[in-house]
Image (cartoon, rainbow over all chains, first blue to last red; front, top):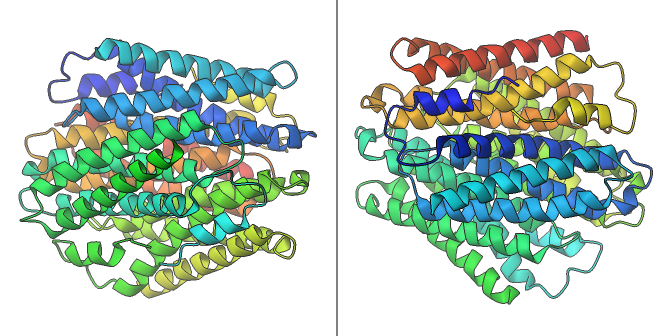
Length: 136
Length: 136
Length: 136
Length: 136
């Protein structure tokens, strides 16, 4: 993929503080990837014959996409850094990724999109928790 | 405004659970209003002569708009209700509304858009906390 | 609802140009309302017994919510006004509101959430087209 | 980056139609990347000493991020495909990427974030136009 997350962090004209730049870039990338994957998973669920068994999955996917998208945006901003906001949004993101990962995992054996999505959620949850830990 | 937040809650075809419907509707409406107000406040700041004194305000406005938007969407969904996700996103929303309300309040005397925005943030923060408390 | 769309337009510190302020405020409000209604309608569809007959509705609702949300944000910004972007996003918004309104109307007799949502889509489509016409 | 755009297209359980899968995946990826880059560029502009010369850039970045985000989501959905909506949102996205690319290019010599962002906008504009052309 052609993102420029690292390039943009390097081009930031002020002090980034003592944030772990690799963990930050990784977390932004996982949030973007997870948001897209969840949107696509919800849509794939809609095209399954037994969509009636996937309604919780579709709903959680939608929540996860919304929160991951907001988290990616908040993390991409460095001016006027606010530790409280960063931590609260990372916690919300890790929480919804856990829920969505658990739900998708239930269907991962039957539906490939749920398997791929569960993996994206797990990676994003880990990246959020890693960044949270590094923030102290 | 012509929202149909209450109408849509009433039209929900399944059990809403024992959520406080008025507090839920209020919180969704305040999140929507706060998101729009923050987007407009950031833009108004850009047109102030001393934009260099408002950079933290612009950044916090942008975060607040993103998180309020995601929160409004999560709260608007009732299928497969997830208490953990709801609480985490409400906490993140109350946190960013507090930060943005504090920041806008600093400029409220000089800039009417910051005054209006600080009020929207305070109302949204209260609505999030009220809903959180009612969820037990 | 407690939005401050008009208040924020009045608080804008620079020249708003010769835009029809009432039509602009109305369009922003309808976009916000339609986005929320579509998100809630998609979720209500998920809780219908015959969700398998509502998959196109759920998908169109999701598109409509995303595009209405982006349109509300673009319209809320006035600094460095760009007529091309404004017109293109208003056309996209009117287009998706037409599609979503048509789809929801098909189910309006059986599902109250689709009836309310179709009305929100029609109002938003009209508000977008009214603003487009007034922009010349 | 760890996106799974291609994996999710491959996991889609129904017929994708005769869309050019590579062009579609590319366009989704460029939209995601451009949205993130624009959000980061607006924030970098806020930390420049001469932020007062970058207000149009910040505003266009914000519009571009919002529209690219919505476009990525719409393109990620395949159920109940709607050609009118797809084309309208792609046109809006190409339009805002053109505007934002032009604006960032003006500052590319002085600000590295604007140079990287202009490139992301050009790539995304091209990807949207390529997909539009392939849709016939």
